[in-house]
Length: 377
Ligand SMILES: Cc1cc2nc3c(=O)[nH]c(=O)nc-3n(C[C@H](O)[C@H](O)[C@H](O)COP(=O)(O)O)c2cc1C
Image 1: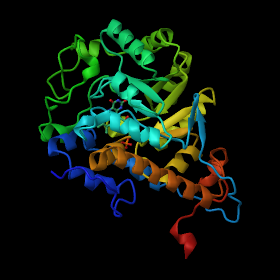
Image 2 (image 1 turned 90 degrees about the vertical axis):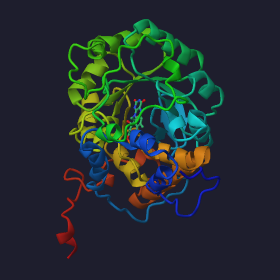
Image 3 (image 1 turned 90 degrees about the horizontal axis):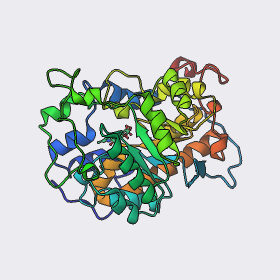
Image 4 (image 1 turned 180 degrees about the vertical axis):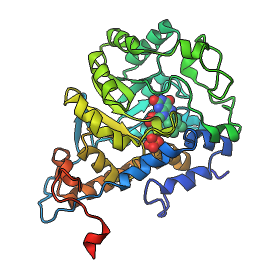
């Protein structure tokens, strides 16, 4: 295994370049955890492939004077509509763990969503952060423990709760199982210490139904309950269906993240970007809709915004960059993505984030229909 870099070499030019650099610096079993998707990884691949099926419309000769990617979102002033998705156990990628990621978020004017399964105490991450932080909550079987966790996040200055609802059980991550991944002793879900966990049951074990883990899985009433437990904005993550989006609104949530968990839970779900428009339509502008899954280029950020997202979140590339060069790597990766977004905006004629819309894409209902290669001959 190679040590982390202390500089950024020129061949780290795009987010996907970080994958090979990260892989060379992480133990193979831990890499399988950090990078795997569920099942045959169709959804994971599709998250990326679907972006490429959305051709962009180039517009020319528009003034870009005073252009900006600045974004206002749920009380945050972000330099760009790009945030860091909650991902577990950053210490598997780099010994500086979540604190390094938070440092990079601060340096690049973005917001980090800290996972319930962070490998460092949420108070320590907040103490070392200059970025605004949101706390990602997995509602625990022990609701009193869940309430205490929310209170800790509030006391530590987290600015919103992101409640993840699409992973009541672990996905069937065959790649991880084949690699024989187990958490190394120095990496722990420290923020869950002291909780009475139901026995750990993988979905590959003989039976899921009837086990404590499924019997205590959260239901819609728990989202309504959560709303009564905090004054922080509550954002629900893992919505892919318009009917679920409407139910979330009925529970009083303040935001929705369209996400299939990076293809890590239910393999076979369509790409997040393909699911986004129906959710945006169902939400009717009542609350902001964000999305994650497969965002690897500034062009993808623009595509997601064109289809109604207010911001995107980045998962795996942050872990790859963290493994490659710690905080420096993460900050560089975010800057690369933002620079790509600026370029995409300039070349599609969008001076500000508010200018980005469906007109940026060759869609059947947005002006001239893209007729494919034959149109070029
Ligand atoms: C290693 C790993 C750990 C993750 N841990 C969490 C988590 O603790 N909570 C959560 O809500 N989502 C978690 N996710 C999902 C991400 O928040 C996000 O939805 C997904 O990674 C986005 O897709 P992308 O990796 O293609 O950018 C995790 C994803 C990865 C890759």
